[in-house]
Amino acid sequence: MPSDLATVSLHRKRALILLGIATVAFTVILELIDPSHVSHGPRILDFEFASTRSRAAQIMAEWGLKGRSAAHLSLLLDYGYMLSYGLFFALAGFAVRDTARARGWPRLAALGTVVPFFALTAASFDASENVALLLTLGGNGGDLAPPFAAVCSTIKFTLISIAILYALCGLTLRLRVRLLQPS
Image (tube, rainbow, N blue to C red):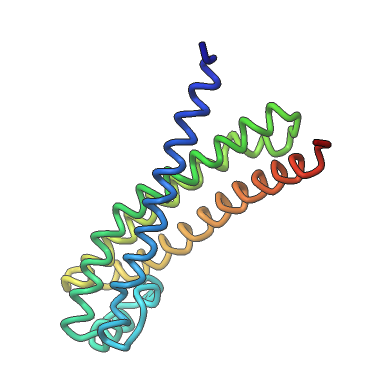
């Protein structure tokens, strides 16, 4: 009978696979529907960092009706993306933390008490950013929504980058140990 740890590990692996597939699928879909493809104008990322009402208005004007429609769809689908990448990198971080504890890597294990939550927090800032951007698209963002979205976007990218780096460090160390083990 498998131990509780083995069961958790198996469930985590399955969840990581499903969330990884979902994250990649959302990445591809969001790239394909980026407003720049229909308008030959700015990307959605430019809109995230518009920072001012006038720059946001300029981007929306360059997009035109089709580009704004694509941006709206992109921002709505992004909520599924947030869920998939937030959970994926949180679970990956917890897996790294558990591996670090088991292998006696205390610094990596200590970081694992905090860093996996960065992915979830990044997704929360992404959700707040999207609310501000949807308000701006609808003409209801005023002067506050564009800078709020830019601040949320900056925090989101910072936190998710740290979470990704943590997961990659853990993966690299794990692969290194496997490659250095005598067969």
